[in-house]
Length: 195
Image (tube, rainbow, N blue to C red; front, side, top):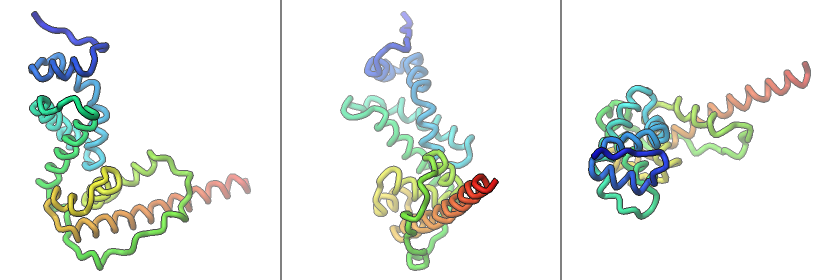
């Protein structure tokens, strides 16, 4: 007898069926979460095809390790951690993006208080996506995932100073992009006001 998964099945039922390698349950889980998990991968990997490949590998890892999920805490959070780790493994394999630099060379943390609040979260994510890969990875791990520099260094196999330097440079790049965007918005407002 073949089990059919309906969209109304509880997440717990789907997880239990995935533990039995039920293809229909795996497909249901993938369809339910692939969009959100792709967004996680895109935070770290700019190339959309590469990010999609990492997401697929991440789902394979999820199906392989799903028996480790003990129904405590958020299942999506558990998947999120596996997906971040998969993205970091991809980045470690493509390590040519990590220029070693001394933290003393990096500029000071910018003052964000002066920036306009007119930007949407989407705009900020687009700016983060434009950062060089190393900067974007460290910034995302530190600012979005909440990892310490020590944890980032361990995850990426880099020094803590490199992590700090990459974060500082990412912030500087973002500050510059935010200031440019603010100037652009002010110019538009000024033209609208005078036009």
